[in-house]
Image (cartoon, rainbow, N blue to C red):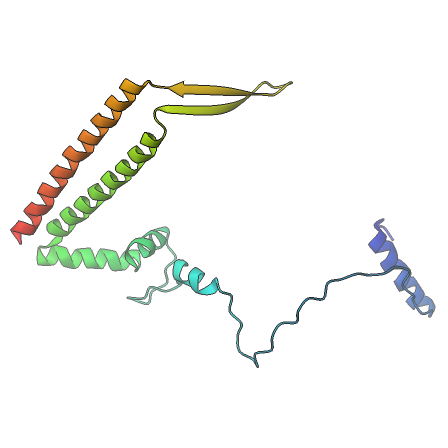
Length: 189
């Protein structure tokens, strides 16, 4: 009887009554929730609505192409990007190198990455443009008596418009370069 919690005392009392040959009578009321009973589907496995979604996102144990176990960290990355394991990607790129098509493949990948980066840059510029060059920050200041300090930041209307136009020009210029490079690839085919 080392434990001092109420539940432990109840259990010890019940055990002592059983050992003494007495019938144990509960001296408390236990309340529980009885919700709707699960529907009997006759042995059929029940599925949550999220299980299909999670199955599509979760990396499988084995590669769908080569049936090898996917347990490396790179396998996870390549599963999300390419839909197969790292070894399959290495084999694919090796076959392209043997055929002499790897440079074109790598160049296309670089162009796609540059397009994606420019798209992200454009989205962040749109978000910045919505702020009108003004921003508020709240900082917790003080150790013994903490206070909330409001910091306002503004870059001025002319400076803001100049920054936005320079950024738009930069993105437009880079997009033209990427499109030109993409046209060169398509023209070389």
